[in-house]
Length: 277
Image (tube, rainbow, N blue to C red; front, side, top):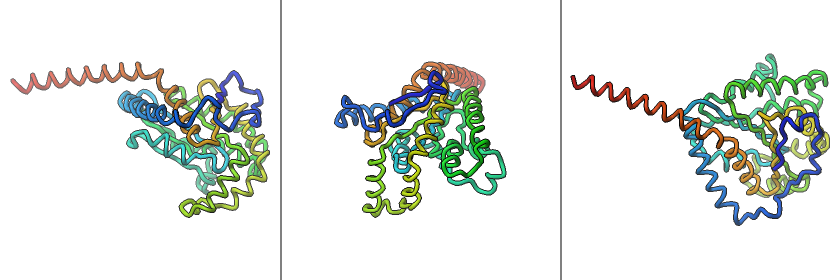
């Protein structure tokens, strides 16, 4: 896992120097027990988040085609209580969305206090796909980096914990997964010629992502680069990172719940006393 914060802002990140495979010390045989424990911890932390209503959590998932955004949602987010989780997937904007600023459709899906929102792709497509496929003038998409930083900072200042994950796969692994889709009937619905066409833009996307990391990584809303060639390790890293981000809030959330509980008990006691008169 490679975390990019404000200390690295403006410095180029070289994706070709960042591993897509798990480090040797990480073993799949040991991962399940840790992942299961993290799943229970995340469920407990979410329960405190939901009750305290002091913060919300926004998880942004970005990655090349087949990087595993859906799989990450299934396995990591699947540990959470669905009552407080929403998932938004951002396709090409509609005519209505295009008639507003590029963040208009995004803001509607940000999480309420106590809740999680998961973005399967996000506002970053407006400085990635838009840039690579020349869908807007450079002057327009280049100005969006600052808009995005300001937008995310505003969310943070209103209590949102922002975590941005780039699922980092290799060119060879992507090819393998695309070919596997053709052999798996249950995955045939995912087949798209555009996935193969985008491989012709691999280097363009690499440069676009590197600029995203350099221009939009902050201490409050860091980019977390996740080696994603091994699905089990990808899921483990994301679960670890989410748990690490929420743990520091546990005590404060519990204190709020204790205060609310004490007030509710006092209210109930007063009601019983009054009703016995």
